[in-house]
Amino acid sequence: MKLVWTILAAALLLACGDKAQTLGTPAQDTSPVTGTGKAYTVGGWKPGDKASWEAQLKARAQYGQNDYSRVE
Image: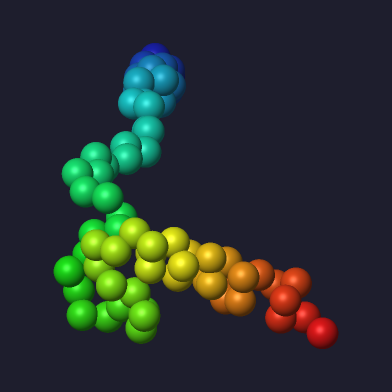
C-alpha cells in the first residue's frame, strides 16, 4: 500500500511541473508590402508597391471578406 501512495504522490508532483506553453511570434524582418517571393499572387498587386498593396487590402476587405456585401 505504501508503494501505491508513493507512486500517486510522484504522479501528482510531476503534473505540477508542467512548463508554460506560450505562442512565440516570429520576428518579421521585412514589410508585408515586399511580398513572399512566391509565384502565386493576386493579379494587380506588384510586390514592393505600397499603393497597390493597400488597394488590394481594401478590395479584399470590401468584396472578399465582407459577408454583408455577399448576403442578399
